Image 1: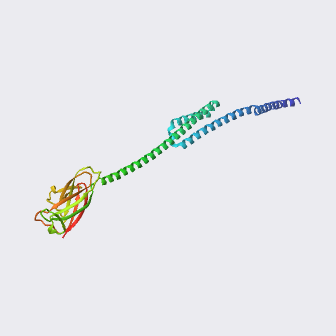
Image 2: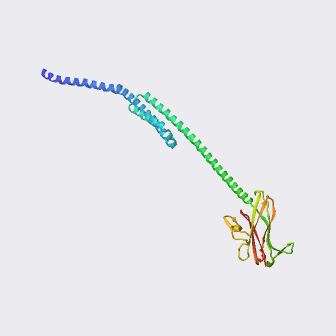
Image 3: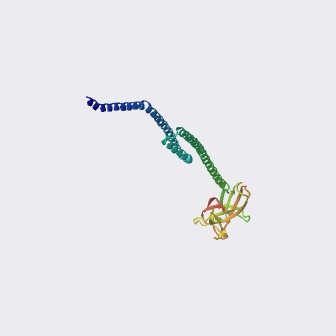
Length: 305
């Protein structure tokens, strides 16, 4: 019996040992479950929540900054230096968050970044306002310039029309042009108008040279051209330049001429062509034209039978 008891004792010892170990394990498990682990989880969760909050704040700043850049387009390029400062600060803050650095330090860095982005918005808004004002000023300048151009064109047109009017007005004019054939009736050479070619001694043209205050006073030479009936040939004393005058770049033969000392007043002018002794006038229609070297004064005609 004693031997059987001795054989059961070692087993009893192991049971007791295992019971003690189980109790210790249970106690340890209960302790860490109810006391140690909640403390660890609370700190971990708080730190994680803080980091998530900081990351959210950083993302919000960067998203707003990107939106502003997209909205203002080309203007944002003028603030590229400040944009680089913002992005470099954002990278640094991101590193601190990933490294679980001190919350207060990260928070201060984040607040500094927010202030920089605020300054960025203020500066870009000022640029936008200035640019808008400049555009409005340029628009007004262009409108004023266009209006000035129109006024200049109107003045130029008025001046051209006035110049044309003055140019047209500052010319000689001949009125009541009358040509006829005459013969001398007696020794006193009394003039008698005739339509008979065989009796003609002289062809005479009279007209009134009108008054015009726009023309400078002084001598003016008037040329008379008489065309021979049926031929168009001009009655003239010679065919050389001595019996021609310049008109619009062309040499024109003349029959007779007269220089008048023009004093801006109307006066009657007479130009005569004397037939050479022994010559006879031809029958037909005679065209008579009057010129100065600057202009054509007018024409008339008569007929001889």
